[in-house]
Amino acid sequence: MLIDTHAHLNFAAFKDDADKIIDQCLKNDLWIINVGSQYSTSKRAIEIAEKYPKGIYAAIGLHPIHAIPNKVDVSEVSPSFKSKPEKFNADKYRKLAKSKKVIAVGEVGLDYSYAKNDKNKEIQKKVFIEQLSLAKELNLPVIIHCRDAWKDLIEILRNFQAQHLVAGSWQLAGVAHFFSGSIEDAKELISMGFLVSFTGVITFTKAYDATIEEIPMEKLMIETDCPYVSPVPFRGKRNIPLYVKYVAKRISEIKEVSENKVADTTTQNAKNLFKI
Image 1 (cartoon, rainbow, N blue to C red):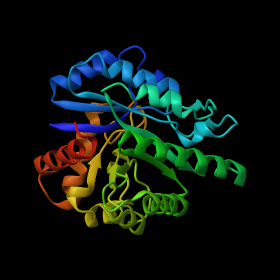
Image 2: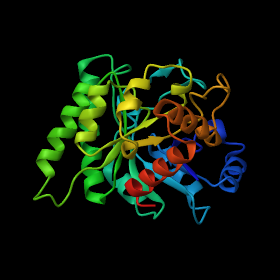
Image 3: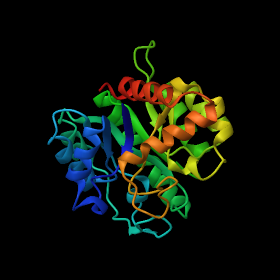
Image 4: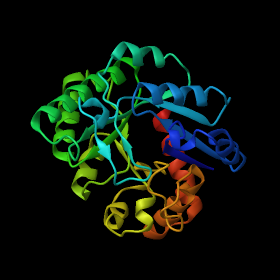
């Protein structure tokens, strides 16, 4: 069994065949967490998940590039898109969280590659903290997106945990999805109780091999982030959850353990974090 811990079958790239892909995944003992990037895609993730009694789940949240007030042309990913700015409304997301299929708040975080000025960075920080507060209120883990902002993100997480940790009774939990930071960043996150997750990128670059070698298996998860970053041998094509097995295979090679070990451990890690 495998779990694709970060997919976007709720995006337009799958408007014609999401159900067909999900059926294939479930037949192959593959579970999926569809992750929202704003209200509309969060709602869609829930609608998809509620069609299935088991194996398909949803996360709700406002992605940092949608939190800033200007449209962003994201042309370097395939398929490319323009962001739709949205003002975070906690009450709207709180209502979505009433669905039993919602297992996390995400994806949320900081993305300075598109926040080109200090004003936009401050907006992202504010919205990120608001969503951390919502996760605390709902007692849900967070799925974190971070690009070119690791120092600020880790500082916010540390301050938030220090502020809200009461006699060891509660600690913010979550995962840094599509991890792109340094070994030091990974160790900082793990020290705070977070997991780190890798995508198909690791099948065509060795940039993260050393980090994966150092991270304990119990702190790792795997994902596709489909429809983006298809692994070898599918680069340039639309990614799908079934390709998460290539991420597991590459981790098994890097850590010199069996693919079954990677599958079993990352699956259990996901079940523990998301309580599924």
